[in-house]
Length: 82
Picture 1 (cartoon, helix red, strand yellow):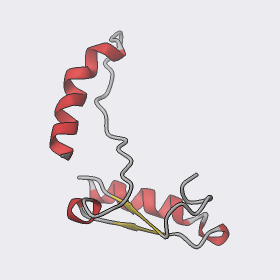
Picture 2 (spheres, one colour):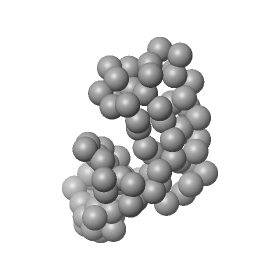
Picture 3 (tube, helix red, strand yellow):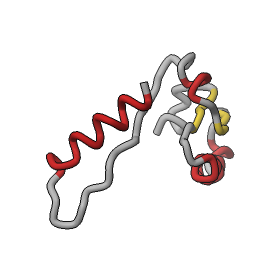
């Protein structure tokens, strides 16, 4: 939606797994024919300079577990992001 509505001229994808980040960029770039937004892999330092940051990181829920059971893991992930 950010890309299609041209909310930003450039979208950065940041992931500790750079191959995964590149895959996300490749997928998002498939829609580049309908928008002027550029999509590329970025660094955490670059993300720190952005006007808008969307964090999609999260801990995996274990089988039989609850979303509440992963809050501690998610908190640790967010601490690592900041």
